[in-house]
Structures are given as structure tokens and as C-alpha cells.
Image (cartoon, rainbow, N blue to C red; front, side, top):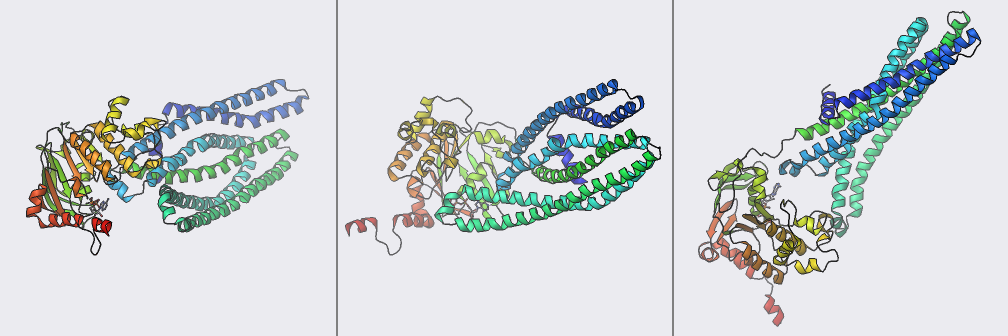
Length: 586
Ligand SMILES: Nc1ncnc2c1ncn2[C@@H]1O[C@H](COP(=O)(O)OP(=O)(O)OP(=O)(O)O)[C@@H](O)[C@H]1O
């Protein structure tokens, strides 16, 4: 029952509009009424014709009127259902999408991004189909069924009793089969969601697959899922194939039984020929809704499964945004105070670090790969919360500040400088609320050494960059990210290996530009290439979950052997290799 409650909850959440649902129910009743009245009016028409031997024009006109009203109501209802369904789908999708976007990064560490995508696209569609395909037939079917049974009882209760018995037998046979179908369809939905997740991920990494010649192994991996889907589909088809003749045979058997009993009762003079005719027409009013109900319950179960998955997602806790203060970060120092942090329990990245970042200075983080440089940035961006300790800006705990306003004041040039599909302009203005002229944009591009490249493109700033920026080189993507940070002009700037994809000449130019940027802002740099951090006001050395040294380059060269080792490693060639100058002279 819990899963049905979830379905109703999600439908209410999609806000179809009570008034519109009421109107649909009303129109469905009108449609049903015309089907209910059709046989009884036919009976009147036939019987009055046989009694009076004159054409009963008035009954014919009433019949035409009722059928016309029924058809008009059905047509209008069709439109209203479509309207409400579209509205529901948009509401539900935008709410689930909004939820997905505000989920914490930890959710996406655990779940592939195609998982919520499948809930946004597929599951919402399945839930919606209850309304588009089944709501009207269910209401009118229910009404037609009940009223037809009452009318039949009044017409001839004995014949109706015979009908009841045949229907109960058919019900007992079909219900367990329908229940099996509903279990199967739930498994199919789950498998389809996994399959979608698998192919989305593989296709998004098509370059990697081709470079590793992993096309056939990817196909083999997908074959297993496809086979499972095929097997489940076949089981569903087999059950449906058994159901169809049972339903057909039920109709035929019921018809034969009613015809046989009915004919006997006509010949005995208990009922008229018109009554028998009406009886048979009502019989269809009962059997067809019953068949529809089996489809309705199958769809209802399927939708309940989809609602369960959507509700699970909606129940996830969004990024905590408890803080409301809107502090300006300009001129504020940052303090990582006794921080312990672990992505997974028992595997700390930092056990106890304490880092002071003075305002408006350049602070660089060095350490071998995996030391936790990017993780520090993630903590500062509040992607994750420390397990122990706290982060202060000025004297304020960062969690007390509004998350939105906080991130709005931090520029971030990420390690792999990802871009979104769309134009260069859209990527440069991502998240920027203030309007910027082309002139201002080109000023930033100039500083980021990208002005010439963009200017010679036929569509300039409106050039499409392709999915994840595939049409740009790694270095160009980094320069777009740097230009974006320049445009955002935030008081705090995070540069994660920001110049690692650039050739030495461009890197030098960017360093010059970055040096201008560093005035009046606090800049945190994580870099492998120590040449990029030599000028930093402070260098923090990370090793084995701790800060093992801090100071300027000159100070660390004197007092910190590990730092000296890192610097020397970068300067000297690999063991047994000649230096570049030796190779050239050889
Ligand atoms: N989302 C994550 N889930 C689990 N572990 C993670 C996650 N991100 C990073 N780690 C782990 O945390 C540690 C620190 O990673 P981090 O990316 O911060 O290092 P880094 O110093 O920036 O490395 P690099 O210089 O290679 O970029 C690594 O051991 C890494 O495997």
C-alpha cells in the first residue's frame, strides 16, 4: 500500500490542478453516461418499432442526441487530459531536475549522473501515462460497469446472476497472471534504468573507448544487459500472450452463455427481443472495462514503481544551505582550523591540518599527486564538510554564510577546465549575473591570451564548443576558464593546476596576466609545476595527511628537506636519463 501512497503523493506533487481533474472526471462521466444510455435507448427504439409498427422518430432523435453529446464530451476530455498531462510532466520534471541540481556532490560520488537523468526523463513519463492513457478509461469504465450491472439487474436479475458467475470465474483466472505481469514490469524498468546509465556513460567517453580500442568489449558488456532485458521482455510477452486468448475466450464464452439463456427466456416470453439485444450490448459495457482494468492495474503498478524511484530521489537531502549571512569576502583571511577530512570512513585525506591564508596574498599548495590539494579547494567550495575542525573567513564560520553568496564570491579554475556545450560566450558568462559587453569580454580574453584565437573564428564568441568543449584544445579550454574567472572578478580565486595544459610561452603570458589579477584578491594555487608558484607569498607543503612546512620558496628551500626534494626532482632528469642540454649537445 505504501508504494501506491507514494504514487498519489508524486501525482499531487506534480500539481495537475484539482479543478482540471474534476472537469476531466465530469467529462468522463458524461462520456460514460452516453455508453450506458445507448443500449437502453436501442431497446426502446427496437421495441417501440415492433409494438407500434411505425418508425419511432423521437427515440431515434434522443439516441442521436445522446451519442453526439457523448462524442463531444469525449473529444473535449481528450484535449483536457492532454493539457493536464503536459502540465504535470513539465511540473514534475522541473521539480525533479531542480532537486538533482541541488543534491550534494557526495550523491554524485555514489551514483552515476545518468541515474537521476533516467528518473527525470523515463520515470516521470511512466507516472504521467497513468493520467494520459488510463485515467479517463478507468473512470468511465468504472461508471459504465456499475451502472450497466444495475440496469441489467433491473432488466432481468436471473440472467444477470448467470453473468456474475461467469465473470467471477474469469476474474479468479486472470488476477494471478496480472500480478505476475506487474512484478515483471518493475524488473524491466530497473534494468532499463541501469542500461541507460551504462550507455550514457560509455558514449560520453567515446574518445577513450576508441583510443583504448574498447569498442567490442563495451559491446560485450552491454550484451549482458540487453540479454537480460530480452529475457524479461520475452517472459512479459509470454504472459501477455496467455492473457489475450483467456480474455477473448471469456468474452465469447460469456456471450454464448447469455445468448443461450437469453434466447430461452425470449421464447418463454419472460423478456422481449429488445431486452435481449440491450442485454448483449450491456455485456460489452461490462467486459471491455474489465479488460481495461487489467491494463490499468498493470500501468498503475508500473507507475507505482517509478514513483518509488522518483520519491527516493526527492527524499535525498539537498546541499545544506543553513547559513544566511551575506558577508563580503573582500579583504578577509581564511583559516582551515584543525581540519580532519575523509571521503570514505577510515581513509582520511587530512588528519589534522591548520592553515592560515592571509587576505589578498597568493598562497600555493604543493605536494605529490593525491596529497589533497584539490580536496582543500573542494572543502573551501563547500562541496564537502570537514569531519572535524572548522573553516573560518575572518572570524566567521563559513557555514554561517549563505552558500549561494559564498560560492558567488569564489572564482574557480578547475584542473581539467571542463566546459558545457554551447557557445564560447555562454561558457564565459556561466553564472555571471551582471550584463557584460563584448568589449569587456574581449579584455578578459586578451589577458587570458585567447583574444586572437576567438577573434579569428568566423562566429567569434558565438562559436559552439561542442559537448564538454571537445572542439577546443586542452589549453584553449583552460584559457576560457581563466578568462571566465577574470570576468567574475571575485575576491577569492582558486587555481587548480590552471596552467598545466599550456605551452611554456603561453603559460608565461598567463602568469603575467594572473599576476595582475592577484592584486586585491586572495589567490590559492595548487600546482605540480613548482615554477608556477615560486613567486607565491606563502607555500604550504602537504604530505601524508598533514602540513609539513610553510613559508616562501627561499625559506622552504632552507628549512624543509621534502620541499627541496620536490624542487630538485623537477629540475633533475629521471634516473639514468640525460638532461635536455646533454641530449642537444650529443
Ligand atoms: N570523490 C572522491 N571520493 C573518494 N576519494 C577521493 C575523491 N576525490 C579524491 N579522492 C582521494 O583523495 C585523495 C586526495 O585527492 P586530491 O584530488 O585532493 O589530490 P591532489 O593533491 O589534488 O592530487 P593531484 O595533484 O594528482 O591532482 C586521493 O587519495 C584521492 O584518491
